[in-house]
Amino acid sequence: MKREVEVLVIGGGVVGVCAAYFLGKQGRQVVLVEKGELCAGSSYGNAGLVVPSHSVPLAAPGVAFKALKWMLDPESPFYVAPRWDAALWRWLWNFWRTGNENHVRRALPLLRDLHLASKGLFAELTRLKGMACAYEERGALYAFRTRAGLEAGIAEGERLGGAGLPPQVLDRAGVEALEGMEARVEGGVYYPQDAHLVPDRFVRGMGQHLRGAEVLTQTEVLELRREGGRIVLVRTTRGDFAPREVVLAAGSWSPLLARQAGLSLPIQAAKGYSITLKKPLPCPAVPLLLGEAKVGVTPMGEWLRFAGTLELAGLDLRINQRRVEAILRAVPSYLPQIEPAKLELVEIWRGLRPATPDGLPFLGRAPGCGNLTVAAGHATIGLSLGPITGKLVAQVVCGSPEFDLSLLRVDRF
Image (cartoon, rainbow, N blue to C red; front, side):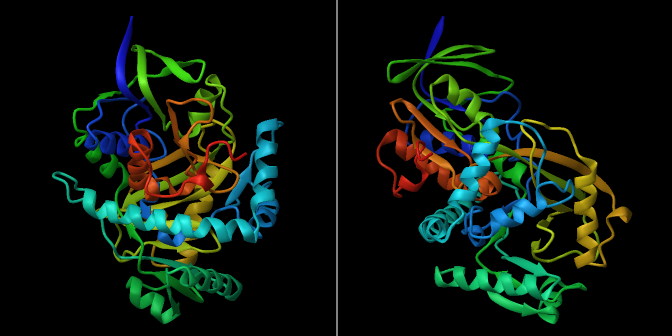
């Protein structure tokens, strides 16, 4: 027997939970289904950064060339596990094809506006009752060990400054003064607009504020059945649903479900790692991104988290210890007072971030399927864009969005 629901949200990460929250504010009756627990995926162990400074898309000039040099090195920031997979090679082709100046020029203003709108929502949502997620607007520092790295960071800062996100360039002494500890760096680029928080506490806290929504965890979607131009049945391990509207926010698993609805989503699972340790003394005062190593270092209340790497290895959740060790080695090469081996380990984590070839998420109505809205493919900026994505999902379902989402359209590939 099918159960009729107004809106069925598939996925209990930051995007799905925020979508359910804003749909509830619009008065919609929502059922959210998640195959694990809330925040069990890549929303859980990420770097916890809210990053307007990440408004340049991943697919940018020169990035594909760097990726080619890195992709066969198992310890590099960007690694592609060798395998024959036609979808992967199409993804890599589109990644190379879209990494041009015209794409950056078009995408940067949209990403900037989305990040800033999301930051405004974070400031509002983290004031809700019980939201103890250690949200702080202290900016973020990009630190560089080499002169070439610093010059590249300054050049990107100039681009972002021209787009209304002006950074401050610091020498080594300035970096040490900002962080309150020794740093082996040439200098850094500081973005005061950025913020940080403990990501799982935010998502689970939001889960306590879903107005009238029903949350079904340990509920796996088995089938999306499409008839004509609509999804008419969603079969799950806890029964069948007949939804008026469906929101697909299942992260790296979204393409598998979308395929059942006749929709192709070129999303690759980009595995990332984090290592959470008990907070040391001294500890960085402001989140850092270690430029050459591509590692984030985030103080999170009583913890310090290192996060990084992008590994295209399919839906593979195995931990590659070599990549964990590469992250741990990188940190003391920038911050010699931090010795990971001497700190108390809280957790080693890995998660699969859903990455599109052009570095932009899919957000909007699925073509030819009038009651399916897709919100997936945020890669490394999913937490940062989570609140605004959720708000836009509600606007797509209920009316018209406040942003022009044509660059994020679901059928752009």
